[in-house]
Image (cartoon, rainbow, N blue to C red; front, side):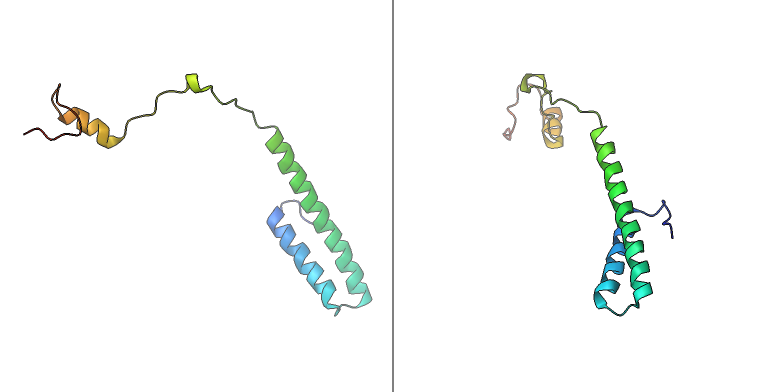
Length: 99
């Protein structure tokens, strides 16, 4: 038996778990147990391949260096700050209510 390569890691892991549970229950005949072990190995190998592929994909991602503190743009103003600046005439202190 060969497992379809389009099976996801999660699906293969669930099948591996189900296979192991059936073996642990001890209700399988000898031939069924041998087949279950073979199937379990295939699911285990598939899981290992999928994890290895994921590791390679992660390692091949470009690494961005974090900008130095001096290179960071200033933190943007909040919407409330921008509205306050727009609604106050020039020279009016912000945060105070003129009377």
